Length: 265
Image 1: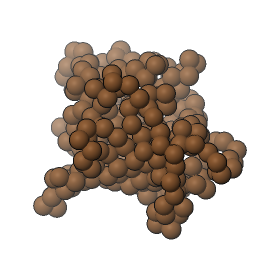
Image 2: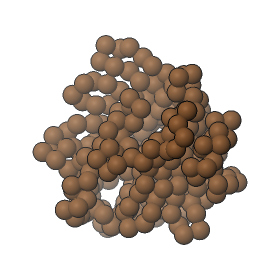
Image 3: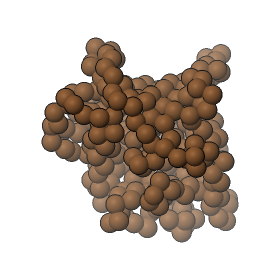
Image 4: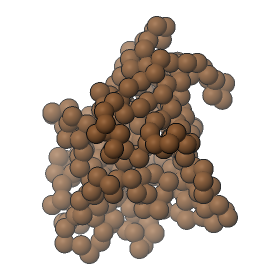
């Protein structure tokens, strides 16, 4: 759970059977949400639009790849295609288990990938309103979940759940003191998330729009909007093309693959 903050949620989408929503705890709802967003592999073509408080816009295009390995842990790779000065820039994320992750950033011309330090994960990713932390998956056990409330979002009945770090270690490493997530009751898909800092100040809001039913219970969000409230800066992610459960080589998610330049082809 995060949203992709649900950046990965628009990338990884899975198939499950319908679930009776009555009487579920906050944790159980999040577990269902997470299960429905786990597939063998996925690939997206994405347009990223950055808009500042004055309305100035920057457009970027990128591809995202994700794969769940045999140990049940996922790896993802984000590759920028445009503009020219960002072409080939890549972010590699490995899920290590027990809530641990490693992330590496590659800039064209480098001879090695740069490991993102834990403090660095609080930084904005490539000028967007997403942090590096937002782009890594969560372990359900790392958080405490409130009992769900009910609220409507754009006419859809939703569970509303507060999510807070479960340990002092997690509280120290995270940017956020808590998150509040709205999950639609009918399809268990997160449509809204609010991010709060350690002083309980609301700092960002994410909206997932343009929900598309691929097949069966599989849904994904065609548009993800993240807004930083203090600055008014916004990032819109639009999915142009999505593929799931396609063959992806394990070797794609390695430093060797990126340094060979194959990721940019």
